[in-house]
Length: 376
Image 1 (cartoon, one colour):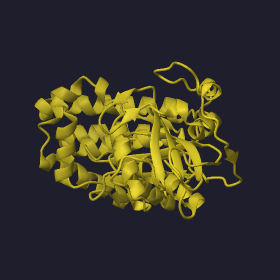
Image 2: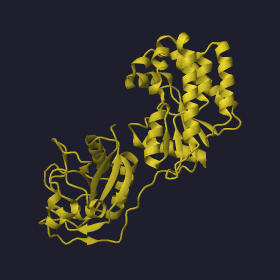
Image 3: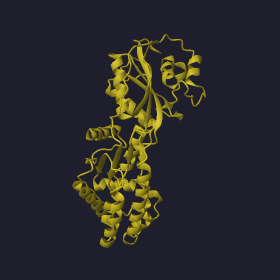
Image 4: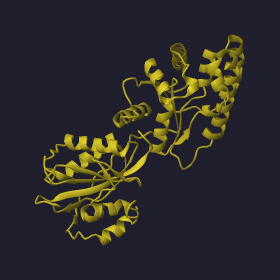
C-alpha cells in the first residue's frame, strides 16, 4: 500500500436492476478500496459503441491507499462478484456493471492493463457529465484543461438524462469519544492504525516521538547501561506532549487519537530497569500521572510474537533488529498485568493476529466496527 490518493471511478450498468448494481458496486468499493469522498448524480445514457440497452452511469471520488494497479485488480474482482462476464472479443457488450479508473491523482499510467487518465474521456459525455458534478475544476494531467472545459469541447452529442435515483454514500462507523488510545507491543501496528483513523475521521493525532530520542539506538546495543536515561527521557517527553497537546483540543477536530498511553512508561520501565532504578522512576511517574487526561477508551492490540518480529524486520529500523522474543513477551506480560489491574480506565484487548488491516480494507473496517461497539 502507498500514500492516500484521490481516485475517480466511472460506473455503468445496463442489465438487470441497474440502480441496485450501481449501489452494490459503490458499497464494495467502499469496503475494499477506500473511503468515498463524493458521488455524482446518476444519468441514463444510450449504449455507446454498440447496440444495446440504455445505461445508468455515475462517477465517484475515492480516497485510497492502494496503487492504481492494485485498485484496478480489485475493481475487476468486484465486477466478477457482481455477475459481469467478459466476452472474449474486444468489442463492447451489455454488462451488469462496468468500473473504470478515470483519474488516479495527477498520475499518468500507460501499461498493457491500465491507461490513466482514461484515454476515451474526452469523447464520452456519459462520463464527463457525472464527472462535472464532482470534479468540474479538476485538471486533466495531459490535456491541461478542466473537466468543465472538456465537456464543452466534446464532440459527443448523446442525449443524456439525469434520473431521480441517488446512490447512497457508505459511511465508516461512528466513534463518539473525545480521546482514544491505541496501544500494543513493538511492531503491533498501533501507529499505522492511529494514522489511518486520524486521516479518515479528521482526528487530532498524537504519535510517540521515539525518532528524536538519542538514547534509543544506544539502549538496544547496551540495555543495562542506557535503560534508565532512556526511560527518563521518554517519561519527560510523553508528559510534555500530553500536557501541552491533549489538554488543548483542536476545535476543528472530532476527537484525539494517540498511539501510546502514558502508563506505557511504567510498563517498559518495569521490564528494563534495575529494581532500585525502577522504584525511583515509579515515584516520578506517579507524581506526573495524576495530572494527565485519561482516554475514554484504551485499546490494546494483541499480536502474535512471530508476527511482531516479522513487522519489526519489515520496517527495517537498524536499532530494532536485535529485539528478541523474550523482551517482547516481557512487554506483553507487563501490558496484560496493567490491563487486569485497571478499575478506572475503559481498557479492551483486541486480537489482531489473524487480520491484516493495512493491506485489506475489509479488516480495517471490521476493526473500526469492533471499536465502535466497544464505545457504545
